[in-house]
Length: 419
Image 1 (cartoon, rainbow, N blue to C red):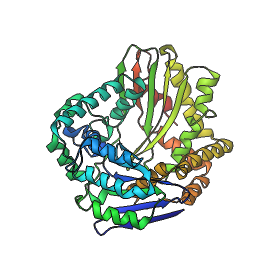
Image 2 (cartoon, rainbow, N blue to C red; image 1 turned 120 degrees about the vertical axis):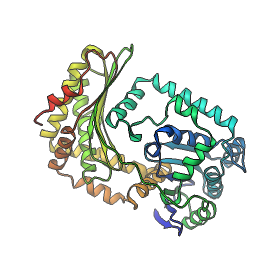
Image 3 (tube, rainbow, N blue to C red; image 1 turned 90 degrees about the horizontal axis):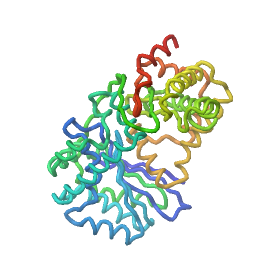
């Protein structure tokens, strides 16, 4: 396996991981801009732009895009997140030039034809409705909004029916010109490939991307309460706190702490809440890192009458983990973390995504050896400290369902006082 990085004179970076045992290549372009880069009036435009990318260019119709890639046995995909947007292809190695040509075409020559735009806005509005009808989706949207109110990082990626309906081709082009630039883009590929060929084909096709780059809007965590009363069989609860960003030296400790709290069937939350007390079928913890902030917390769904006990038990689990984490638990969580991080080495698509995100986040690649070394080096005190640091921040509480017995953030803060 060979990893190569080339930076073109324009600032566009190309990173590849040659996996010679493979017959296919996964490649794409990752943009260091997502929902967090939107103004209030642009809420949802990143996701709409991703949808519109495959709807026709000056050289290809939407049907031609699909036919060309599928005639080569390949497929196209795209994804929008808070801080990134990616456009990817998977196909045979000899057809990498075709994939890069199509990807460059959709990023630089999309026509945003009015009829296609109106149709796709309708599709996304239906997608928004579907998300609102799914409690375990909508609860994380309102949780993020309560954690980071009145900020793009806290807004749902999909936007609202009102904002999505307002966008036209000019708005899409303005957002594209401002954010899809050489300085915040990475072309990544993994699988059966020749690095220099990827470099040459990228240089020839992506030169028309704008050269400037924009700064990421800062985030300010606040926390608080949000609830959505719904007639449901279960009440859905998320309780969270500010935690380490992916640029924070404690990020590995924060992830390992989350694994111990609720990362698997042996975790404290799963054992105490589900196995011993039968209070919930689904309960797990999470640790999300952004560039300058992060979130740690847990999600659970339970009968409304059980929510008070569930909340108390879950918070006690978090506190006790921070105070009494054992070496056995730490070793188990380290193993989980290493498997999670290293799984990407086994799939070209996941590997391309991993190396592209590393380049965008850190400006360099993080080797397998470095990741494993940092996890193995974690001491009990570091992991406990990461947990305590999160639990000492202002709580964020989100509830969907029967909210009468649901906790409030001040209740959580009181229970954690003195930790």
